[in-house]
Length: 511
View (cartoon, rainbow, N blue to C red):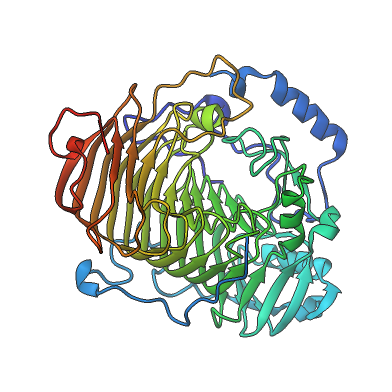
């Protein structure tokens, strides 16, 4: 299993010895997905979590995407698709590894008629793939059709290939008995997304302690993994959600993951979630959910992970398009694993929250992030770094380069440390150092909409945001206001005129 690596940044906190091993509840790859955690052990675990000081102390119609992603002029970055990837090349950067063995899901008894429940077939396929793991791995072919199944777990050295017209469809909220219930992630300590009960439903497609995984489609528009999220969203909006909804695709403690050339849609909760993992390549994807009425359907969430690449992808969801995370308040700080080395290039993100965000759960730290050659669209915020005084942690060495921001954006560029939603597992003794927000660069940013306050930078009196650099940043109509508080930096070629704090002035606030 991949072990948490020591933080490299001087802002990082040490990793407690108790977190050097993955938790005992991480299921094996072949664990039957219908095997839920028994109620009594769950209650005992809840009692343990509530008594231990470890964590407590220290929406609208689906947007129809364009057939092809719009590309910005290549001269802006001068880089090819695979240049400068954060990747160790254990997998070839452009060709998925070939497998020695191949199987068709129909050979395990599956029927793609949109009504037959194929859970047993998928579990049998995973067991077969596990047997081939030390003998060249296995490719599982999903033919055209709609293949209904309960959630299932992957095994190492596996490729899942969806043919053109193939959909793997999740059993819906009305069959939530098929979704296993798991304890919370250790860097969160409790549930998320409207509930604080410390349990969560399993992901639809899960990878736990696995390596060398490829999930790919023949045609990114018709090769689909569908989370069937409508019932889950309705229960959340009705206030009837008691356990955190499942992610569509989630990897924990995993290494070497390629997801490419397919559509991921209608997730009950976050769509793709990579946690405590490394060496991830996601490209040529369509990540979709209704922009309204589909709560918490983030598109792409790397979380306490490293060497992550997202390329050539269209995202339109009901929450953040991209949200880079690293744990929540005291739980995230105690786990102490940052997210670092993330490249996001040539994406279009439509969102009513934040098109491309960092946080708000960033207590383990976020560093070395490059976002370039992309479009941030929709009626939410454009580029958003969000934190709060209770988060702790840090966000350092982040560059946004060559970004077009359009739509009825509330705020085009936003950095704030007044975000709410404190972690309820942290008691009154949790008083972290203020979060460090340092060395953030916005370069070649074009704002085509007309937000009244396109720029909002709100730091803390206890710890200013520092070294914020703006180069060639402008609104198309040269109008709008800056709102700045407790931030220092520099500005070159910025229209409208930026805050005094970007003009070497001692002023702390300027409208």
